[in-house]
Image 1 (spheres, rainbow, N blue to C red):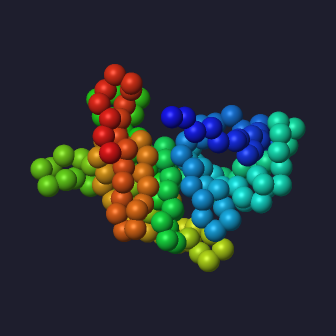
Image 2 (cartoon, one colour):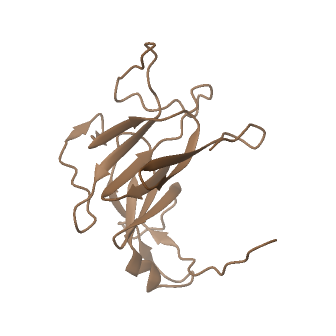
Image 3 (cartoon, rainbow, N blue to C red):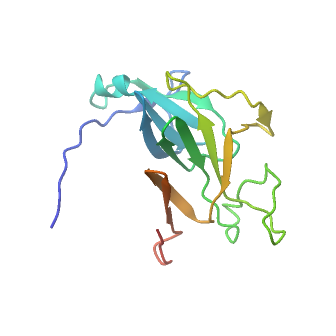
Length: 173
């Protein structure tokens, strides 16, 4: 059985300098009127800007909210937090992982895959009061996650992650 849902909006994104945004846009999440987008940085767009525009002639501005402590391969929102994660596969040199927090696991191996949590203000703006470390904003919360995590969702107080890398490799939830 198939389910065909209509496409509600298809709009081009424009960077703050007015040029067409051509960077990576990964996972998306919605929180209090904002659409959050993972990519080279963490981006956001007011949902109103998307809902008020339609078609390829629209110019929807994408705002760089901040640079996370790791690449923002995927994002999720839960309660008043924005969670940012990086896809890591240390066996693949293209995805070496986040080495900025130099923390090791119980066996002494460096933890490369992180889920960084940023608290959002009442208006949906990240507080970002922890300063920066090596070019990324220090998160309010930091959780080690398995390598090859591609995305996540929250179900009540539980975290569901999808893990895979390539169509020929096993996938896990």
